[in-house]
Amino acid sequence: MQSKEAPTSMEVEEIHSEPNSISASLPPKPKFESLKAHEMSDGQIQFRKVSVPPHRYSPLKKAWMDIYTPIYEQMKVDIRMNLKGRKVELKTRADTPDISNLQKCADFVHAFMLGFDVIDAIALLRLDELFVDSFEIKDVKTLRGEHLSRAIGRLSGKGGKTKFAIENSTKTRIVIADTKIHILGSFANIKIARDSLCSLILGSPAGKVYSKLRAVTARLAERF
Image (cartoon, rainbow, N blue to C red; front, top):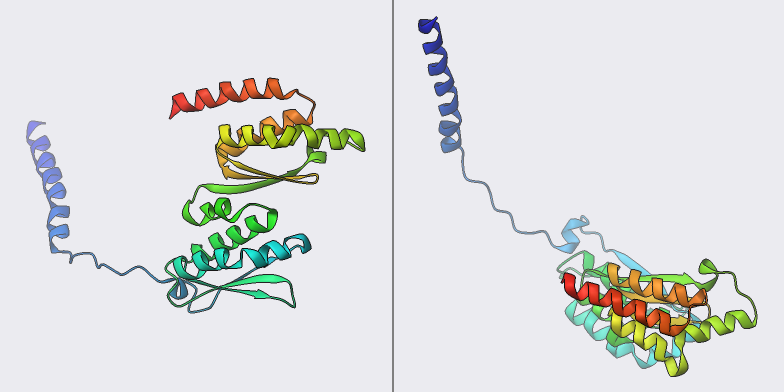
């Protein structure tokens, strides 16, 4: 039995030593330069179109240079206003460094159309983990007439105090456009802000929402 076992162990040792000799004979891995945006799409130019609602037409005129400069100079994406179609058109260039820049620019322009300030919306170009979440008051609770206007009043508070308190504590930006609500921020922060707004819609007093926010933000501060 002993004479049979010895050769098998020798065979195993030989098998283990074979891959080392193969890896030594292989040529080094080639290093390729990263593809440019127009090369990824087989040289095809990519487009995005963002509709301009009627009430955002004059604010867009005023803030056009603030929107145009970062998109054209920093993100290397072409932008123009189609007056006939009332749309902002974006397209990639040969020197666009990343294909995702086009979608970032489209999100930035769309956020401005929803009612966010350029200073707030521009963060979408610079940070990857920012999103815009939209919902309506009727998605939370069906309200009509004075009940609806009271709910909108609860959301903003006296002089916008409640809205600012939620924005500052959750590090988000909120736009209340009639019955539509838009929130700009990171995924976790949007959830906290949305929960606070939903409880206000459902009739919770502002004081109760503030105390809940304090507890949640304190928990978040401990985590990070």
